[in-house]
Amino acid sequence: MGLWLAASPLILASKSPIRRAVLLAAGLPVEVRAADIDERAIESAAGLDHPGAVAALLAGEKARKVCADTPGRLVVGADQTLSLDGRRYSKPQSTAAARDQLMTLAGRTHELHSAVAVWRDNGPAFEHVEVARLTMRPFSPAFLDAYLETAGEAISTSVGGYQLERLGVQLFDRIEGDHFVILGLPLLALMSFLRQDGSLVA
Image (cartoon, rainbow, N blue to C red):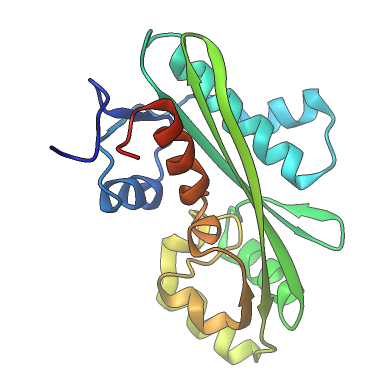
């Protein structure tokens, strides 16, 4: 008998290859159906300031959007926000934006708020938000230029302009928090829900 008990795989309402890889590595079957939502418009309409609340809202909206077309299925949405001294940051859209953002974060401690939401039959079944604190080391402009050149397009795929599981680890002095939360998916909390739900062997 396998660990997965549900009749169908989880649906991941995200195009993130990291989230998909994390779920698969944990033995959870995954079907990807990325949600097509306008994150910035949803944020603006909601008028939320707290980064955890924003992450939870967007995770839930992704799951809700995909759930509408998949009755009876478990749909997982996830989102992550980065904040420093009360200011939220989004994915840098250019190398110049990434350089400015990383120079701002250098030598300081920022927070990653990662949210996961599970929907089924057009209703929420589970929601969880968790925080990790990461301290970047002070680094030289020469290092940053070399980092940006080596990292390439990957800088625009994550909210911090880094991927901790790859080259981004060179940016940091200290990390406080769950590894999966940093990757953008509170996996332990999700699996706890799936066991309670009867989808995973307890």
